[in-house]
Image 1 (cartoon, rainbow, N blue to C red):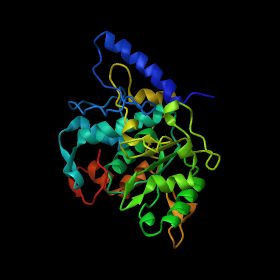
Image 2: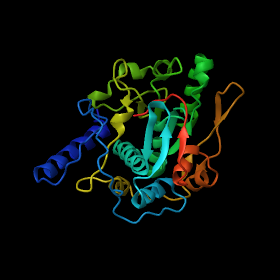
Image 3: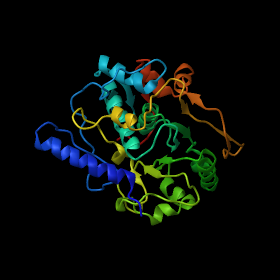
Image 4: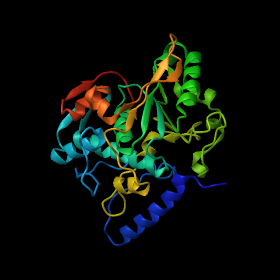
Length: 313
């Protein structure tokens, strides 16, 4: 059985980190999704510049523009999430979105791979995911989670159709919210999530959705969720000494451009069930058309507040 790609990369990263630590050159804590014992999310620490060693093309590329804005003014407040009264600075957004991009690339994802998000727009996890997809060159499809509140059975059909027609490689879902257990609904659609244990280092496999490689949930425990990775386990901050976001892109020769597709859309019927893949929007399109409100306001340096209850790590 082949080893989980994240686990093989993790072993190499731990070896490199230990070598660096022994020489006193690194002080960064490592968090990786393939290991449940490394469960502590690293502290944000002092603001620092992007890990990229090469000049970034920022025109029309949200992820790169974020890094440039952080270099200019990391301490400026950009968004406040009403739930838990969380205030985000530019540095906090840059730090965690780059950490998520590294985690996704570490797992073996590459530019052009597809992500289905079952998160509400009001979640900070959704905003971080949007920036991470821009940084990593991933295409993000958004499935409306509110359908599950009104009609859980229809929501199962919607999830099944979304994963099928997008050929999604990644599913990102909230654990629960609005009196809906989204993990349980997903198990009804992807029963392999109840059988497999990602802690064993074996790649996730489901014949129902052969393209699906990883499922991520926002909860903070693994009880009856061993087939999932926790969202905060995917946050893998880089280090100037032994790892960087740019190194992950260089491995596949990826160059993020303004014309790369970033936001995918789903055509849905009157019930909210996806029927086909719709138009795709590039990095540039998302910015010019303000397709993601919080994402775009941050890049426009427009402080704003997000209302509603949500998971905020």
